[in-house]
Image (cartoon, rainbow, N blue to C red; front, top):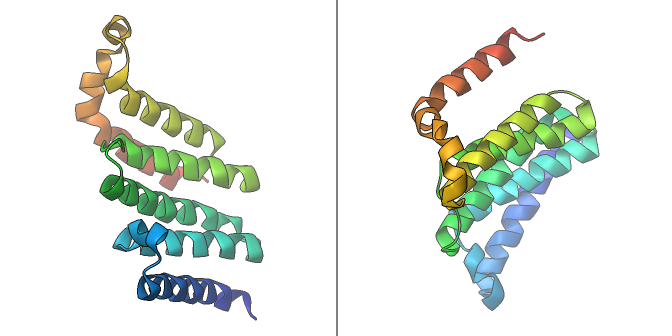
Length: 159
């Protein structure tokens, strides 16, 4: 099978398993009867395709799609799941970290994104005695789109 057909094959197999699972109404898998599961399947197909074809630059998009699918699945099914904008930054940071394991690129961006996202996600649950040094997060919380724009411009200019 050609490498171009691998991704299509993985998606078709995953979608087939998904609809078969829905047809037979497997009791312990009913939480996966939703559109986030389709995103998870596409993300897994991208990851499998990346590993099998040894084209590790697709790892980034695979992790992002998989992460968004897992995030929406968590929002729909678990009350403890965080519903914060920084979850998306965390997903992108993890995608950079995973891709950097194979391509040796953008490791610093992955660490910085993951650290910033973790600070924002967990800043709501930290003890009061630790909140005073983190008051700057209120300002950053309003201006975070500027950081994403700057990061995007940096990635465009980077060779």
